[in-house]
Every structure is written in C-alpha cells, then in structure tokens.
Length: 213
Image 1 (cartoon, rainbow, N blue to C red):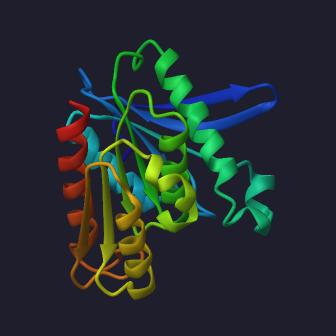
Image 2 (image 1 turned 90 degrees about the vertical axis):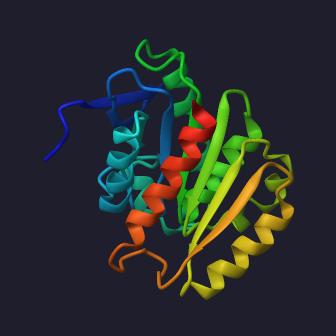
C-alpha cells in the first residue's frame, strides 16, 4: 500500500519531464534523492523499501526516473553517469525551490551505477548536499570526481559481491571526506537475501539522520 504522504510529482526543464514520487512525512528533517541503477526507476521495489524506512525516520524522499524511456532503451547510457548526474542536479534545484522542501538539507542515495552519478553530482555542486549513501554501488564510475566529494559518504556492499567490494575499497581510498565502508555479510549484489536489505535501510537511515539533521 502506498503511504498517504507520498505524492506524484513531475520535474520539468524545457521539453524534458521526469516522473517522480515525493515522500513527505510530517515535519521532515531532510530530503533524500534516489539515484537508481541502469534499467531501474522510481518504482524500484528495493529503493522504495529503503525510502519507506527513511520516511519513518522523518526524512523526505524523492524517487525519480532519471532517464526517459528512450534514454533507458539506449544501451550506451548504461554506464554513462553524466546524464543521470545532470538529472540529480535538476532534482536538487527542484527540491530547493519547492515550498515543502526548500529549507531541507539534501542527501543522495545511489544504487549500482546510480551511486557513481550521485557522487559525481555531489562533487559538481556540493552546496547543501549533506550526505551520500551507496548501495552495491559503482563509485569507480565517478573516479575522477571522488577526491572532490566533501559530503560524508557511506559505502554499503554485499559480502558476496566480490568485484564490487574491490571497486568500493579503491573508491574509499580516493575519498577525502568523512567516509565509512560497510560490508553486509551474506549479501549479494541486489541484497535479496533475508534481512540484508533491512540492514541497508537501517545503516542508510542512521547515516542520513546523523548528517541531514
């Protein structure tokens, strides 16, 4: 069931229109924008699960289709994080101008390739970005931007996601901001194992509440 405090929104710029879901608990203490991996969007069940946990922690959430259907169908966009990073910055501008969220600190939650986009966006426009969380992310896709990230960054990786563990450890070394790397035992890339996505949500909630409020 969709919580009563979730609202359909549309973010536009010129001919571009991005569909989104704004979760708005009473008296939100911060706002988190979700950056999905390739082929995923605002209806991602895993990101919606995390978003609902963050809402219960008193945080507003924005789940957004960062790419249009045509862009998603183009396989060349799978590992091109420049475009979704641009869209995250558009979402940031929207939150900062939207009456219900304009006074809130902002965080990015990136999953898979979306984590690279989130870190690039945080480096390009750091103002009011208070925290970044990566779930099973590909921060290596934003390698050249990592030393410029100033927002406290939490990297969460599954213990059975060996290649991505190595990528995150290398990215961790390049980050110069406040940072933490958490490896969830028994979890694979999508955190489908019982209890593992709950751990992601709890760790993300702790990180965002600590830094956004």
